[in-house]
Amino acid sequence: MKQSELFTKTQKFAPKDEVSRNAQLLIRAGYVYKEMAGVYSLLPLGLRVLEKISAIIKEEMDKIGGQQMKNSVLQNKVNWEKTNRWDDELVDNWFKTKLKSGSDLGLAFTHEEAMTNLMKTFISSHRDLPAYPYDIRTMFRNEKRAKSGLMRGREFYWKALYSFSKNEEEHYKFYEQAQKAYQNIFRRVGLGDLTYLTFASGGTFSKYSHEFQTLSEAGEDIIYIDQEKNLAVNREVFNDEVLAELGIKNKNKLKEAKAIEVGNIFTLGTKFSEPLDLKFKDKNGKEHFVFMGSYGIGISRLLGTIVEVFADDKGIVWPAEVSPFQVHLIDIDAGDEAEKIYQDLRKEGVEVFWDDRPDKKPGEKFADADLLGFPWRLVVSSRSLQAGGVELKKRTNKEGQIVKTEELKNILKNQ
Ligand code: ATP
Ligand code: MG
Image (cartoon, rainbow, N blue to C red):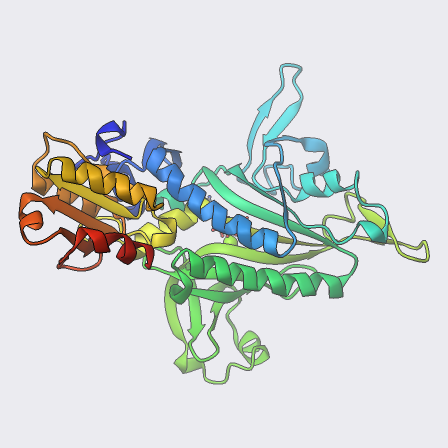
């Protein structure tokens, strides 16, 4: 894509009321537009990142048997009354509205009730199980605080998968696969080394749930990390009994850290299938409630997290797998040569973003490239051509190097 054709532009300053670093950078670089506190529109570059993250999630969910669908946002209160989650006294983050007729509607803040009810149409026999529907979509939550930018939105993007199993054993088999799939996802988006499988509070059917917590000073959670075991415990369940139960012997060795909950997996058991009456008949015709689990990932939170943990004082730094483009080609009076490189790289399938703006000074172009944060910067100028080619620099390196134009493709394609 040519930078001159992109309708968004970078800005020197973020809105004064924006306190979070991820949103400040994303707004300045033109990835998102702030509609109001906790509400952001995704601009073309932001959408490219979101779609790359979503594609990775989709791949990993499909691999373990997930089937994508889309739930409705508008929710009928009847189902939520059955599980006692309609009342504002009990769930404080609903957005609610009314039909013209006066009946109440809610905007989904989660989908356990809706999915359990929907699956009643399709599950009646043991032959119908297991089933793993999932959804990638916008969710609404009337969050009290919205000071973490993309990491806590009132409108946000997530992936939610719900598992429907015959029994606990079948459930935990899948639960473990989901855990591995989550680890793959966080590794693939570049957060593997910073993200810990974390024991958190469970519910009626399991002592613990598992969160995936990414280390960051911008995090709202406190976790205790056992480096040897490569796991962590959330402060909300941190006590001697829990430590003993996880075979953690030396309490003083644990590292306390701030972290961001990028995802979680939860054993629901029959918490929803009982009140909503989702049952199946086993081989002998005996009825049982379906055993359920839920598996969430905050996709827009993940986007904000990646910005938080990798950005430097110059701007955003995207891991290659989620970067909107791989190469920022900067043309400084290079004439036809820049166009030729642009076309050649595109032909090779390299995602190139070409700063072809004739009226911008080199300094402005470099500052934009740093702010936008693509993995490679490629400068073509009369000087680089005289030196034998083009200057290639990694976003994370101080210095670039001159490479021959013919070698460019191979270097970039092998990365
Ligand atoms: P938190 O503890 O951060 O409030 P939660 O435990 O309520 O989140 P879930 O309902 O389990 O979250 O949602 C699944 C995932 O969705 C979370 O792990 C998180 O990554 C993401 N998420 C939840 N709330 C938000 C939000 N307001 N904005 C962005 N992402 C969110
Ligand atoms: Mg939580």
